[in-house]
Length: 296
Ligand SMILES: Nc1ncnc2c1ncn2[C@@H]1O[C@H](COP(=O)(O)OP(=O)(O)OP(=O)(O)O)[C@@H](O)[C@H]1O
Ligand SMILES: [Mg+2]
Image (cartoon, rainbow, N blue to C red):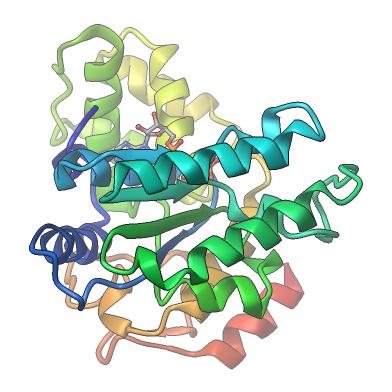
């Protein structure tokens, strides 16, 4: 288990999560009921939720595997998880891929004959239970925020966008990936080849923590090796789906202080945010964002 300190970038998101950890630990009633981490795939949402449990020093109960179990047993597993949570008392309930609980999602397979609806009903009832207040912090994650309905969204009062790495963060992902693969980190983020490799990846549409780790694992970790990898990189798969998820996440964010560009002079706007984000004020134009998604 790791701390939020091990997460690269995502400064705004980490700040907001740390604040909630403090409130939770002090038993404050100001702690929000639910936090939703929203963003495209591979950006570190599941990892951050686990880090949050570590930093809070309280158990984290995870519902990520509930739907993997045999159909029919899922509801029993959900009830078992809820009984566990009640027995533990203070804890974080992490519901990964909350979109999986929404029946009839547009673009995901849904052949579970009502299991999703049943699970969702049980989950919502538990989330609404007043006796959990101040004891259970609900943390959800989704890479498909477009699929969430109002009922689900309203359960999470704090919605945090988790964007892919900005250009200046990519070299730190190289470093971290090397460290995770071989236990040491020799990559110099200021080496000209590393800077060039970063620029190339950015121009190909950027990337995410998971893909960068896969790419780096195929190199010898030398600056030339990383540059060669960047030249051969064909671009992020499902790029447009990921952009849609990211734009939707910003549209749903209610506090502009949570935007990654807010108060961040290093932030470089990717092409799909140009005209939508006003860097001086930090504002996000939702109408233009919706229009952009239509053109993708
Ligand atoms: N900002 C980051 N800092 C550190 N590690 C990261 C970051 N983003 C991604 N990673 C690494 O990338 C991998 C994938 O991260 P993770 O599974 O948390 O992504 P995710 O957002 O939950 O993706 P998905 O939406 O597909 O479930 C992990 O190994 C994680 O450690
Ligand atoms: Mg995940």
